[in-house]
Image (cartoon, rainbow, N blue to C red; front, side):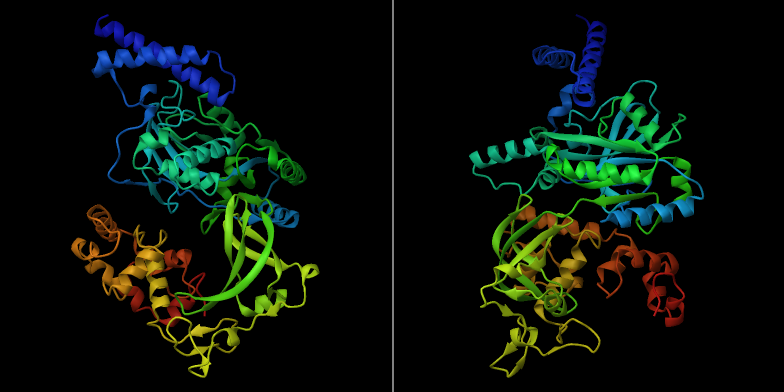
Length: 562
């Protein structure tokens, strides 16, 4: 066989394998046996080995993953990957619909979809070939995980010739429940730590620096929208667009449904709420979208959320356990935060030992007492919180919580910060107690963690343990000191080798390229979250002009006020 014959045969095999992948993973209607598939794959590998010049990155043989990357690059999304507003009751859903109907000025149909709990990704195709794949990141910029996404068989590497010349689709990478259990069983046999839940497993799998590891994980994808396209006229509605995307090779959720009324959307939610256990993937709700694209464009978004879509969340997973104690943690702004110490309990695949308790007034309002059996839930299936005590199970020896008593220090004869022993105060009209010492180690550590967090300066590697180690060793006293660290000084820390130190220095240097809004947010000014930081940046353009802003200028801004 000469190279021309080989090229022709390679194209034939690739077309057959791509079609087999599409029919198996997208249509769930396989047309060839596993043995025939394996035979074609082996023939393709042999031909590519024999004629290496004919090997391309989009060949089905390349799904096994490339060698480890040094680090992920950054991809800027042409249009932001927005988060969704939430509805928790039928009344919330109806309120969203009425509000949206008024803004739209005319009736519209909707599309209902499962809100799968996985990792959102954006896939860009150029001339029919997968060019880049990125995580959502902060919505504006995500991590370049193209090599890892190539290993997922339900992601097409090539599209038909009639596909748009340039396009982006968005989807959710996830791990099936059965795949998750199989993966954990294998990790248990290898005496490795187990994944807490399918979402964590999926996120960890696609963020492996070694794509060969990703290739071993049973990952899948459902594409849920078109991000943008060029060079071809596309359908005018979301529903028709999804049908088109399926026809050119993308895997879409067969359980999605187009509805005419909000009553039908509500019925769809309750139908799947009853059938949630039948899903072979984790889903935390239903997404309801306006179907016509012209209405989506007309409505636009507010902050980081589209007006034309809403996530109607399933009730959080709940469990009952015993409240053993209430301890105090000190936040970055000096707040003394009560933390519930719980008898360990499994909630939605995660072992919960602690839970948030907001403040003393909330504890008293709910009549939660130390020693109570309590109902807990993972709010949004992430942060555990106590909902209510199980009063019927009280034995009479449960103890009410008193913040002043809890922080009272007999040796000082007054309430004191549990970390630095400084004076504690409660401002008039506020529900929180505060540590008076801005140099309290717990506050400093919290400020550094916030400064390095993903939405702020995004310095990976400086979490709770690392910030504490840097402070305890005297290498830093505040966030600014991070920029004077050296690789040599970092290597004096326990468990900090040369590679880890180099990675951290690189992360610190990369943070200098973060936008001004991220820096303003990183400073941790009370009431200045990510959205207000962006508003300030849009108006003042530089840190210097913001520092000179008058109170009057600030008060005229939308979202700021007194």
